[in-house]
Length: 356
Image (cartoon, rainbow, N blue to C red):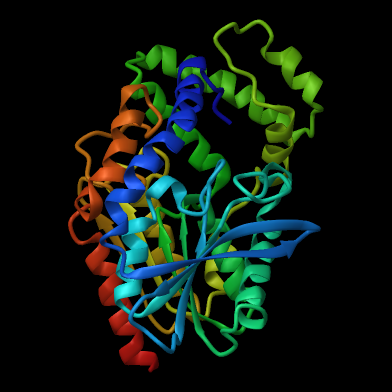
């Protein structure tokens, strides 16, 4: 696992403080364009009350289809800081409702996402689906899953554990925890302008931390290990536990077991998930699966969120974080790579044609 550096962490914290301010200003901008209504929801999982939102198409009286959103990593709220807004609008115009909630310990939700395994996240998603069917009044609704990054390890588990999932859409789905960590660490260091020699040294240091994880080392051992590196921002004890629980996750076996249609989308300029090898893995494993049909695409000049970019650099890298937030809130559909939203619209149409 790549060691954390102080400047990106500080940027994340400052970004988090700015999000609420940006949200207040942006809500009035997008409200006039919303083809949907928002309904506050709450459901239980693991002894915690989770809060979120149900997005209902404004012009559809009888809703027959709904998308369940599965977040990526980190402290993600129900709308992913506004990133989901354009996608919600697209789905609402297609007549699909959307269900999304604050991750445990975020927004109005209790608990702590850092205490979860990917299996825990899968059962949480199932709890949301049960809420949708048994409490929200959508007993017979057709359900699709859409997830981002880390959700790539979660959605196939849900689809394989349930019989009521119609399909899944994976956006920049990660394949292997350690491979993803090494790739994102290198891209971060390249973006910071580090030399190859410096990068190799950092990778050796990261490998030594990986060894601690694999040996189930206690948190204090980890702190002692990094104590001599003044540039390293220690991960919290809670995240250390999260990393130990999830360090071996790999999507390959779950993809081979899939028996529902899959749309897997990647960006050519992703700084977190290597797009070419990940797309190849999806194609290989889905070819071995019972999925009735699937599609795997890489969008040119698209980042981890399939937003337009000319560079491969982390979204939380310095001033880029501020520009990213501003583009999300005020750029509308234009922030996304050409064809991304259209590909999901066409997928829903294709799905309806084949399943309906």
